[in-house]
Image (tube, rainbow, N blue to C red; front, side):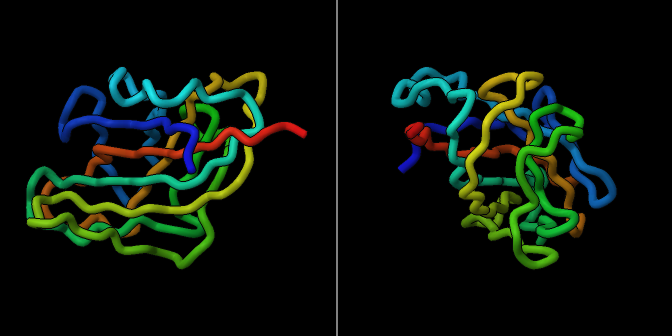
Length: 163
C-alpha cells in the first residue's frame, strides 16, 4: 500500500512540455500533486526511510494513432535523480530487457503507458529538495506521429518505520 505519490502531470504541448527523443534524456520534475483533492489523503514525502514502490508513465504523441513508442530499460532506461540534470542518480534504470513496448490506451488516441517497479529505499542527500525527484526519459524508438511527450509520471512511495 502506498503512503503517497509524487507526480509530473502536464497536457501535451502545455507549458513546460518537452519532446522526447532517442538521443538524449529529458528530465521531468516529480512533486506532490498541486490538486488538494488528490493529495489530501497522504502526507508530505519524508526525507528518509522512503520505499519507492512503482512508477506509472504515460506518453502522448498528440492524438496521433498509437505510435509504438518504446521506452528503453537497462542501460538507456528511465532513471530517477535528485537533481534536474541527472548528476545525482537516485534509482534506475529498473532491471529488465533493453527495451519495453508501451501499452496503447483504449481507442488509440496517441497515449501509451507502462508501470515499472523499483521497490528500493532512499534517503534524500542534504543537497536535494526533499519530496522532489527528477525522472529522466529517453525513448528506445521514436515511434510514429507527432513527437512523444510525457503527460503523466506518478511515482508511488511508502514511508517505512525506522527501527
